[in-house]
Image (cartoon, rainbow, N blue to C red; front, side):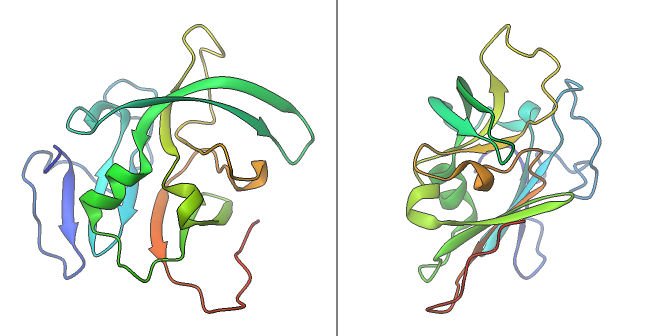
Amino acid sequence: MPPTNAESADGDDRSAARPDADPNDRGPDDCGTSPAVAVEGRDRIVVSASQIDGFPRATQTCTVECASGVRATDEWTGVPIDALAAATDFPGETTHLRVEADDFTAEVPIRSALDGILAFERRAGRDGDEEGLPRLIAEDVAGERLVKRVERIAAVALDAGEEPRVG
C-alpha cells in the first residue's frame, strides 16, 4: 500500500507510514505547497504532494475552461485517479466521484474521472504560486467540474435519473 495515512470504512487504521497525518488538517504539506486530500471508497486514504511516492505519476495536457470563460491549456502532473480508486477500493456500484473543495462540490461521471489525475503540480515555471492545487484534471470533463483546491474525493452511486451536483 502507498505510504499514506489509510483508514478502512470501519475506522481501522491500516497504515503507520504517516501516523501524524490529520485528514482535517487543511494546512500545507511538508513542502508548503499542497494540502492533504482525503480519498474515500470502501477504504480511506489521505494524500498530499509530499506523500505520493508510492503511487504512479502521470502528466496530462488538458484545456480547462473556467466558469468565467477563461480557457487555458497546460500540462499537469499528479496521481492517476484509477490508482487512487484501487488504493481505496471503489465499490462496483460507483457511478460518480464527488469532488469537494471548501466552497464547491462537483459530481463527475466515474468513467471520465478514471482517465484523469489528481494534479499536485502544474507545468514548471507556470504560475509558481499556483493556488488552485490540488486539482482534478480530466480531458473529457467539463471545466466547471474540474474542481480546484480539492479537499476530498468520494466514490458515490447516484440513482438513475438523479442529477449530478455542481456548485
